[in-house]
Image (cartoon, rainbow, N blue to C red; front, side, top):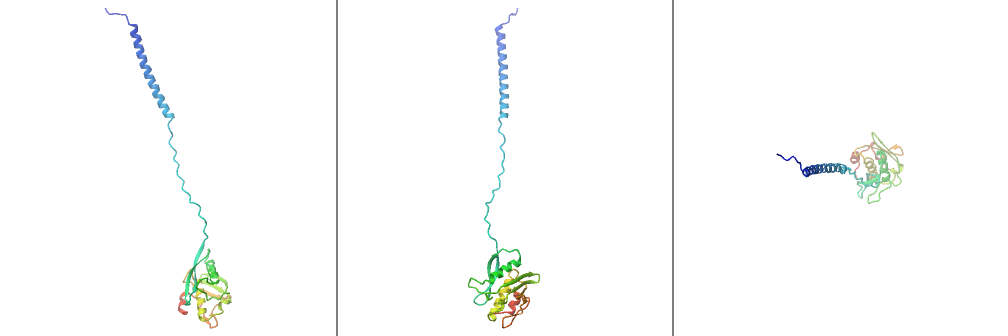
Length: 203
């Protein structure tokens, strides 16, 4: 006959064991949930990408703008030679050539020289469709022999066509077309070009 008496200590032991297992599992689950929650709340945000700005060049000092043009002088052999000269910046051909003639009429500060009389003035300069029109004062026709006349004429023709070598040049004195130059009556064809000058006047 089986013993119907139940050991109270055995039941209590089983209860304690089951309760302990439940407590351990509950504690583990709570710890896992807390760890997961804490990881989410303390997650480091992605770093913000900052695009590098383009380096700016330091401001450059403004350089004075000029223009380089050939002026024509004579050497010791009375040959016409170009000298590149810095002139003030200009926006039109008329301004460029006017600056060039003003510089030419001041004379050379080098070993080159000018056959143009010192007191010669530029009265007018106009760039038109048919060429460059240059009007000089009466002093241009005074002083010197034929070689000097040919030399000064060449200086004017070549300087007036320094921007466009093939352009025709119309030369006048005191507003009148120049037909004869100097006391010896050097004939001047109108208009004059570099090619015509080389053909007609040889030193």
